[in-house]
Image 1 (cartoon, helix red, strand yellow):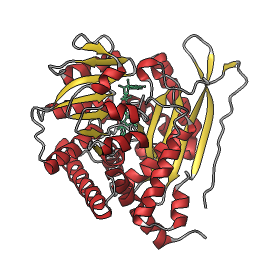
Image 2 (cartoon, protein in one colour; image 1 turned 60 degrees about the horizontal axis):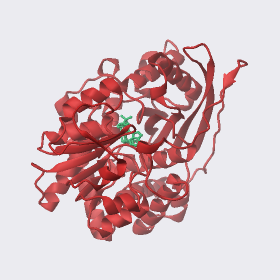
Image 3 (cartoon, protein in one colour; image 1 turned 180 degrees about the horizontal axis):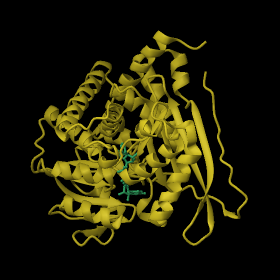
Length: 454
Ligand code: NAD
């Protein structure tokens, strides 16, 4: 049933530097949740699947299929660096499941990228697409390197060689990458251009949909840039309504001030929510008066981090997790809120902009302390939803207005939120398990109808 595919690109005969062997994300400010031993993200996701499969009682063979990705593609490819040396990079594309449609999911450029973590993230894309009722399966890919450590020209060559190495493993009807950590609209423009040039003259114009999250002029959609943050905010406003919580005048802290974190802070500021502490891979800042999220967002776009931002007092990671606020939006990496951080947090809500920021131990502590969690599979699914809108516009050669995109996204997020809340109430389970349950129920139904080939 599950065919595994390993692809390697030829590395040529030049003298090359091997890919970095380090497995850890980074030093002090970027450390993961306080814990002992290696964090096994994929095992955690498999554990949630097993629990959710008991909640909705899907067939055991479907759970077994979903417990592993369909394809694990690994490519090693050489890139000429600015100083004339050639460096070998290791890239991955995990294709988890395509029973609902083509694989869909981001490309991550980060020094912590690993096969197992991408397997976890690809599986989560399967659940997200199913939860959001999108005609997609789940995929995820990336390259293990620090994008801040190379020039823009090098970044472009790395991206293009990676897309070339993936070759026909991706495509608008096969597997559609998008931005994730360390990549953005510009990366997608290079990816699309490379793929178009590989497709040949006849097919060239028909393959724009090979990636989403492109710049508007290159076939992107209005509203994609802020879509994930916008989706997080829709979930927060629904939660606030359910809880009778007044967002105006409330406070939040944000870990990760990239695409997801900064857009969440900017959009929430329009609802009167003040961001009083922020953090990224360079450190943490506190400003009890509240940051101007627009200015901080512009600063990060120009400087690639919050380091050196003039307003705000530098604090440690431990101090950041102890700050009293109403909402915490982890929007960086997985494995950030373990039992220790969960015990320290003084908030009412954790809204998971990032994928997998809370460990199972962290989640247990938060729930015991009565802190609500909007789980990643629901909360950050606005990104893939608007990616789908972009793909449809590419197919139809249309450009929708921002209002149209925003309205569709709002409806989609609110419907998914209600489905998850209803499932959690009916099955007396956590929001996370409920989100998984809604998703795998939908997938299980399709397997039951189509059965197994041959
Ligand atoms: P990004 O690259 O734009 O921003 C990432 C942020 O995380 C940066 O501020 C970076 O400094 C910070 N960061 C990196 N390593 C860190 C560390 N060790 N400690 C603290 N901060 C660190 O990425 P993004 O697109 O905003 O993605 C953030 C998260 O959201 C990821 O988990 C990603 O999978 C998830 N996500 C993104 C999208 C999307 O549309 N971009 C959609 C769904 C989920």
